[in-house]
Length: 249
Picture 1 (tube, rainbow, N blue to C red):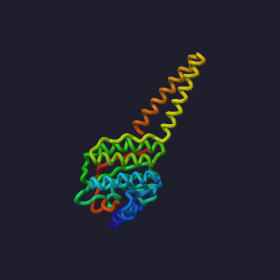
Picture 2 (cartoon, rainbow, N blue to C red):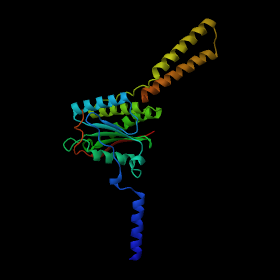
Picture 3 (cartoon, rainbow, N blue to C red):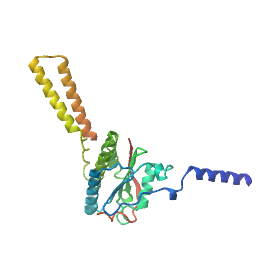
């Protein structure tokens, strides 16, 4: 009996040291009535904030579907180091009660900057029917922008994609990075100048090869850019159904 008590005591101590109780995990405060996002990790600029609110308000007013964005510095910063980003997203979703018991169609985009992971969490009424579409949102709209370092654009594109899935529409194209148009203009001007000088001087060989190389490079830049380039009512008894998508960068 003494040995059993010692084993039990040791096991309980190990559990206490190795895992934080759920009540100790910190969650952000729910947004004010004018906002649909919480940006603890400072990943959302003013333009992105405006666009997120615009999309979220329209989806709420017209479809009665709440969608929220939350960024956190890291799981450790939220006293949630023993949880995965997916698990934290589920707990946050349920803690806020996104959606309602009558219409449990809430959506949440969680981004953990320090852990370099993101999660789309869906309310239970969505079931698992939209997991594939949400994974496409994650893989094609969010993560490519994050890999470029444009977190705000990735979040906005993600919300645009989630909005399209919620409305039963085709996914939008990724937003081209800001530098794409100036680069196209510069490369185009360089090609024109180079071709003009070639015809004027009559040179051949490596210069034409350079033109072809620049043209191929421009093609792949354009190709890659195209491929990867009032609230209040959103709370009230909704809970996660486990559906959604995850990604890392």
